Length: 85
Image (cartoon, rainbow, N blue to C red):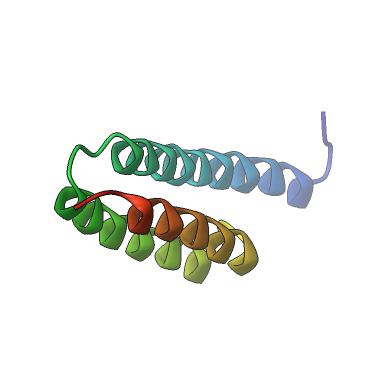
């Protein structure tokens, strides 16, 4: 266990951030699963817009890297475009 006051504060801050990031990442995974489970192309396109907005938001907050978000968006766009109308 840390002995310095600043180290104890760091531990508290890191735990808060870990839980905050975990909640966002869990939401991201759920939204992506909803997109992959979409039954129609229109539904998938609507969900794709939601997922894209969420990924961009996570990049701005520093939760995920911008290249990770770009990679996910690219793969999901390919999936949506391959769906039959």
